[in-house]
Structures are given as structure tokens and as C-alpha cells.
Image (cartoon, rainbow, N blue to C red):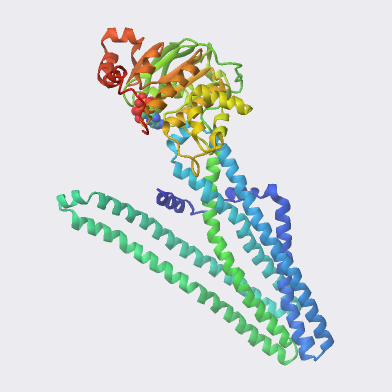
Length: 607
Ligand SMILES: Nc1ncnc2c1ncn2[C@@H]1O[C@H](COP(=O)(O)OP(=O)(O)OP(=O)(O)O)[C@@H](O)[C@H]1O
Ligand SMILES: [Mg+2]
């Protein structure tokens, strides 16, 4: 999976987008104080770097060559003092860059997280989790690194070169002009190299992922290819892909290997010109020995920032691609939002009506067709039917995780899109088939139902849900951590905790997707009891797999292919001898036999 996302990342970054760059820069805006401190420290340090070389020149000319020990002593003292200042400056900007990077990454992640919370279920249908994870982790990091370390290298380079140039002009303007012609050549050459190297690497990655794909296909289909006598063709195809990849890798390697020598050659030409022209000037006293030495140091010093900036340039392309994806996530609009005039309901008690509701996840595949249903307040509805019939879809619509494509759903007499989303969802208690617990303690997880609940409330809800007993047997009881590093809970136990959470929330509407498997008989009995408690007096939808739940419902809906195939009480439907009767006689016979067999019904240890 990750390979694909990596590959797609490479595809993105072929151009520079001014708008994206501006927006990346804006991420630093809230931290302008840090940024200013960071830039000031860099200006200080780069200035000092150039001054050090200048002082060395003075030490040679005015101290050593002039045999002036007083002067030598002074210069060395200044040198030493400035080194301390410079060290403090380096410490400051590295710390600030690190801090800036952390904060920007935190901001971006927070923005993405907030958006991910708002986005509707449909966003998650079409966006792989792996894609989202890559945005949140590696992309935000890449952007933050560009703003912190990338900016550090670039500004250090620019200010370093800038202050060197100033001192070169102070020492000798003619030589300075020669060096000035070298800088743009170095920058252009380095930039071009990076561009070509990156291009070749991109080709390698692209071909590599094609090859991986071909590998997969050939390995999984190896029997078929053998049977069809396709081996030779597969090999040929494989070779066709491998040879351009080999060539591209080779070109990338040659270019990388050439980069440094070429840069060194250019600077050697620069140093040569300085030696030659400077030497000639020195012959008539136009420049001192220390001056020539200083120039050579400046040119050598420039190599490093130029290489660094070339590297940052390459990283910048990747960071821009990352930023485009991160911003696209931050900018995505949830397709279920509150209307401008939405009202917050005081309660969601009242009838629930599906009025000619049509729904599909993907346009070509209708799931619910013109469904009409009237559920009275306080009624318990059991939904049964084959897998893929649309049972979960119906409750997803009730909870407004999705909205009808056609038709209207009314709660308490009003089109539910007139209510606020939060208003509806905070009045609904849901227990999912594979219940989700958040990291934290069991107590925290139950308390999610009502954040201001006291510990006693939490325990009361757990007792009502039937969860108290098993929680008490845990070493730390309610303070036991769940999930990674904590206790491993069974699906049934997680359902009990979710039930307790729902009971604590005291919702008007209750939705339950019964667990189908891995629930032991004892837990199952507890869940049954908990459900009974919470369903009392509330409008409830239960996607039921157990006969006991189904029988207890006020009304059973048999859903088939997105339609209500049958509707009525258990007794009525049995009498009709239709779908339900068949389901009942086939699927529930075993369960039924168990109910009457005094031995099979006993709790069994484990699952
Ligand atoms: N998020 C989704 N995106 C696209 N199609 C979906 C999505 N969820 C469900 N479907 C499709 O909609 C249809 C109804 O699915 P639904 O989950 O409502 O069935 P169900 O009756 O709950 O089945 P089960 O008993 O297996 O839970 C199925 O064909 C399913 O493939
Ligand atoms: Mg389902």
C-alpha cells in the first residue's frame, strides 16, 4: 500500500506552484517571533563567519607579518570572544529551528485532525486510510522541515555568501568582482545537476513500482501462465521494464558522482584566478598575503552553502507536493453540514419517518430504493435480512452519517436536515458491531457518553449495562487501560462498555448492531439485559442476529435488496410463512434448540 502512495507522491512534484509556496510560508506566520529570532541569530552567525576570515587576514598581515605582538594579542582576543558569541548564536538558531518545525507540524496535524473529524463518512469511503496516514505523518513533517531546516540552510547560505561578498569588497574590489562571477555559475550548475538527478530518480521510482506490480501479477498468476505457456512472454515483458530502470539508475549515479568534482573544478578555477590575479596585484602591493589567503578561504567556504542550497531545492519540490496534498485535505468540504438555519433540538423524542428514501453510496449501485417507514416514538425495530441487504445503511441514515439522495427523513415531525448534526447525533446512542474504544481507561471510555458524569454515574451505567461485573475482575478495575498496552477485551466486552457509554448518555434514539460472533454465552446474556434496559422507552433500531432480541422487538423488518420485504411482529410473520418464516426455521433452529436444551444454555468458559 505505502509503495503506491510513495509513487503517487513522486508523480505530483513536477512543478513549482507560487500559491502553494505562499501558503507554506504562511504556516510560519503565527510563530513570527520565533522566526524573527531565528533569522536574527542566523544573520549574526553568518556575519561572524565572514568576520572570522577577515580577522585571520588581519592576524597574518598586521600581526604576524608586521611582527606586532600587541596587535596580534588584541586580534586573537577579539577572535576568541566572537567565537563564543557565534556559538551562542548557533545554539539559538538550531534550537529555534527545531522548535519552529515542531510547532508547524503540530499546527498542520491539528488542522488536519479537526478536518478529519468534520468530514462525512462518505469521505472515508473514497479515501484510503493509508493515504490519510501519509498526509498526517510524513507530509506534515516534510513541510515543517522545509520551513525550519530548509530555511536554516538557505538563509545561512545566503547571508553567509552575502557577508563574505561585503568583506571581499572591503579587502579588494577587483578580486571581489572575479569571485562574484563564479557564484552564479556555481548556483546554476548545482541547480541543473539536482534537476537532472531528481528526474532520473523519479524515472527509477516509477519504473520500480511498475516492476513491483508486474512481479505481483506474475507471481500470483504463475500457475495460470504456466498453463497458458506464457512464461517467455512474461520474461520479455519483465526485461522491457528492467532495462530502462537500470539505465536511469546508472545515469542518476553518474550524475551524482560528477556533481562534487564539477563544483570543485569551478571553485578551483576561481581559486586559480585569485592566486594568479592576486599574486600579480601583490607584486606591486595591491593586496596583502593575508588578503589573498582570506579570498581563498571565502571561495572554499562558499562551496558548502551552494551544495546545501541545491539539496534544499530538491527537498523543496517534494515539500511542495506534500503541501499540495495536505492543503487539499484541509480544504476538503464535508458533504453533510448544517444548513444555515439549522435548529438545535432540545430532544429527539418523536416519530421517525422514512419518506420515499432512496440512497446509494456509489451512483451506479442503488442500495435503498424508495423506502418508506414510520417508526413510532419508543418503538423497538429489529432489522433482519441477508448480508448486504442494506440494514447498516438504514441505521447510518437514521444517525445522519449519510443523508438520503432522494426523499426525506423526518424526526419528530421535521425534515432532519433542519436540525443541527450535533443536535441529532448527541441524542443518539450507538453500539457498533465492532465497537470502537478510544485509548484511555475503561472509565474514560464510558464517560465519553456524558463528559460531566461522576465516577458513581459511570459505575451505575456500567452496572445497568451489565459490564460492572467483568470490569471488577480486572486488576485495575475501571482504571484499566484499554487497547494497546492495556487489557485485551473481547468484542462482547467492548460492546458492554459501549452499552454503558450509551446508557450514560441517556439518548432518545438507540441504535445497536449486534455482534454476530465471538461473544460467549454469559456476555451475550449480559448484553441482552443491558439492551433491554436501554431500549425501554426509547426509539430503538437493532440489527438483530439473535432470536431473543428479534422476538422482543415491537416490529421486525425483513430487509432484502434495499427494500422492506416483510414487516410485522414475530407471531404475525411466522403466520405469513414468508421470508421471515424461512429465516426462522433455517437460521434460528439451532438457537431455538439451545433455548430448550437445559445443558447447552449454560455459560461456557472463554469463547
Ligand atoms: N461505505 C460504502 N461504500 C460503498 N458501498 C457500500 C458502503 N457500505 C455498504 N455498501 C454497500 O451497500 C450495500 C448495503 O450494505 P449494508 O452495509 O447496509 O448491508 P447490511 O445489510 O448491513 O449487511 P451486513 O449484514 O453484512 O452487515 C452492500 O451492497 C454494500 O456493499
Ligand atoms: Mg451491516
